[in-house]
Length: 408
Picture 1 (cartoon, rainbow, N blue to C red):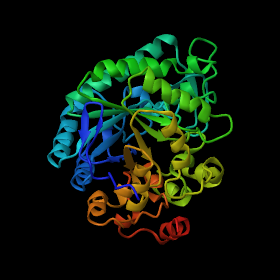
Picture 2 (picture 1 turned 180 degrees about the vertical axis):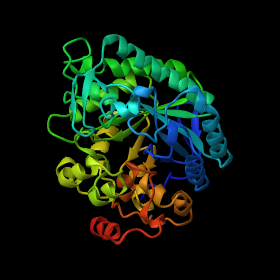
Picture 3 (picture 1 turned 135 degrees about the vertical axis):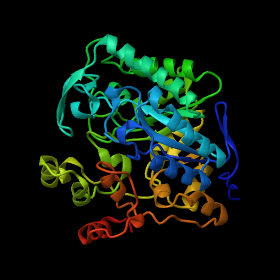
Picture 4 (picture 1 turned 60 degrees about the horizontal axis):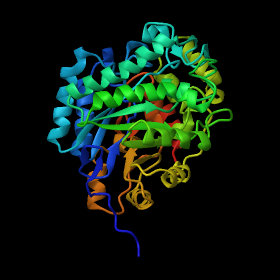
């Protein structure tokens, strides 16, 4: 007999009970001019909450100014708490829980955005900015770990029910974990135990700040997505450490490295023409047009593209796991939950249709209309993330690119 779907049953993450098994993934919205919440951010997350989601996640909020990677990104500081509280109140009114992803971009920034020379586990050069990167001093490592805890305190003040710590995708914690970016010779580099030290310090501060009334999730890589990055043997050990030593209450299983394998995260191709269309005039769009296909190689898309690796984590761990990656149909979501994952997480499907969860409740054959052309991602780097199906009067050249790249 087939397992009965648990999709619309409640489930817990630490002290938090969600009304169903769905989470709006922590995908960057680019809706925060001035690094503060906006009416657009309010409207979007309220619509997702009204659409039936169990929990919606604001993404991502930098724990310090040095952690900003985009101009239109949240920066956790006291001044933005009233704006965040307005959003969490609206989410709660619709019956959903509210979460915020907390992170630091490390080397994925530029002085013009983060206000300083970008920092990382080790010194180097980031071709994607492009900019020189400075390795962090031990005193800075301590300070940033404490900033994660301070950000959790602010999240509680803002009415968040949960925080998601970003330890994947080649951002700062991931830069310490991965041998690709961590070339340190001190106690923070070398062995995996040393490379996990910064993550453990951050988690110690997070768990102290979260106390007994906030849920703590962690986004982790299952693979970095390229030769020389982390593979399953090490990432499963990272996951076990988060489970057994750090107190994490759920893991969000992802993969990819923004500065090295960006489409491993999202799959499909990056619409280079669309991306450069929205960029301000200058040398950057010219460079992206010339080298974009080499810098951002395509990765084949299929539904639930992370599932094969995620099942290996399910077998190795006892804690609640959140599956994310390529979910666009009720049928596949039921399959994933039937495989033993406690929650499913979606981003592009909910940008395409904020009421997708309610539609799945009404129709067991529901399927969202997202074609994974990645228009929303290409647009996100310059203005707010949006699905092309909600945009009127798109240039014919963009429509043509979308049609070429859509998943069939």
